[in-house]
Length: 362
Ligand SMILES: *Cc1c(COP(=O)(O)O)cnc(C)c1O
Image 1 (cartoon, protein in one colour):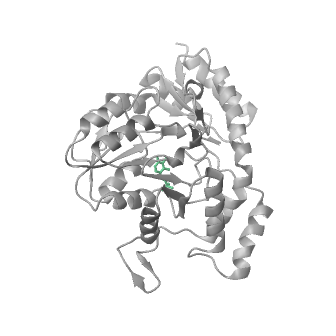
Image 2 (cartoon, rainbow, N blue to C red):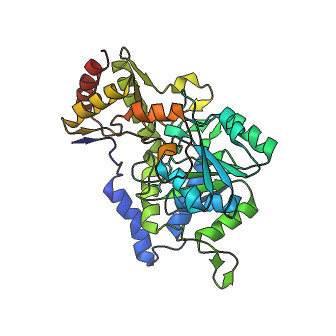
Image 3 (cartoon, rainbow, N blue to C red):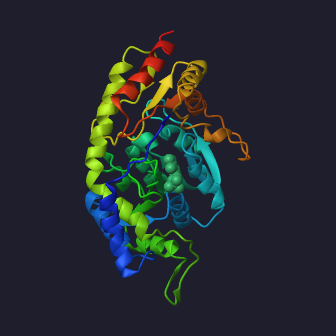
């Protein structure tokens, strides 16, 4: 069986040696040494001063939205992302206003964001889809002009550098996921990034139920993570550059093999200033039936690509208001993410492209 993703695991002895430190100390959660060490390493690696390690990449969306407004009002968001992005908006008591994406980047279209801004708008929540950057300059300009914060769901963006800085450094607040399926992971986990000390203190409070010992200052949530999860991050971090290099090679192999097919691939080379993390291998097929034919043919060989993202968020049945986002709906109909991970063997990649190519030359 070949899955869309296979979790990267570090050498077991390396993980055990790190986790053994928590064991010796008898301290396994609540801002332990390993959590703080991982935070230090991440801050240094990404050149970010204000970063917190958290339980996952969803609670950080909730924390970010709590920081920009206490419920009520609208959050302008993308129609093409994982459901967690939209759910966090509703969960926090806001109304999501879905806008369409740009066909080239799959990221939110700033012109449509501008058109959706009203007096009820509390914030913009945009996703760096597949680890490729949103139009950060245009969104920041809107943020300044209308005085509304931009939050980035940067769940895919760890390791991407954009115009000389980590992609996590953009926006009022950025959040990331370190889930086992992401390009860097801590089994479950995530982080939240901001740019000033007072907001950082607020987020730190949210992460631990809004109190510090006997000092109770706000409502909060459990956003913490454990020493076992931090240890996984510390064990994987030294391998990260090699992980990205290997993914880049796989990307080139796929790209070469699919060069003469009627498909569209991501084009990181078309964005000067971008050093991409090679997080996913999405393929846009020429039609929905072609995409489904490829999916069925691969599944018959126990190869499991994934429709990611499907469905377009604006079409989810439990959001009351209907929006039309034709570009996102079309992408959700035609995109398939092919298996893409460091352990994918050349023969496996070959088997995949031999199935895909004949079905895409019709
Ligand atoms: C994975 C993901 C999340 C959720 O992260 P978890 O760590 O699984 O909670 C949120 N947004 C996007 C775009 C994601 O891909």
